[in-house]
Image (cartoon, rainbow, N blue to C red):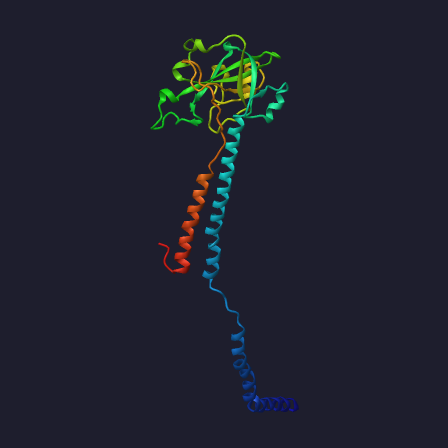
Length: 295
């Protein structure tokens, strides 16, 4: 019985406590929520709109493309000056052929003077090649303004035996039209005996992409591979572009066929970058400043 009385007494005390302090407890626990809520709202950081971040990120497109356009202007000027330097170098007074042919590796586009005789029986033709007239390559065959009868032709490459040491080198005598390809039509140009001539040093030429390979067995030569040519013709890997009068006798190869094959596409690059910069700058101003739709 004493146990039940103790339990009843505890229950009675808990009811009295609940009735007496429940209002204070509720007030004590609810009042802090009402007082802390405003402070929590004030401490909440404000986030920037996503468009504000994208605005400055997208601005880098016109700025960067404009900078790349300026860089291409500098590269274009550098390439034009380099081409002009090479042309001036090719017009310098000729120097004697060096005894050591390895020295020619640093003498490309330099004129040299040689003395010897041609070996016409070992002549080869490279082509088809376009004629260079007045230092300007004429339009290639197939264009609307080209003249196939004048434009399509070959370079006459003839081994040349040097008088002072007996070495054999290659001389690009010049360009001939397609109708003069047979030797019998060029008999007058096949000079015999010892002569002196000036030529511009040229190094080996790399094969362009998608260009067929040379085929010595069929007499098909498309590009200047000095190592392959020297092995086939049993001569030194030395090549000179013959210099001479621009209007030789009829049937003679046209000399001065030096091609300054240096890639120069900087003008198209700078136009592309500047156009991209202008277009993206207009779109950026229209969308972020004037608040207009892009289209």
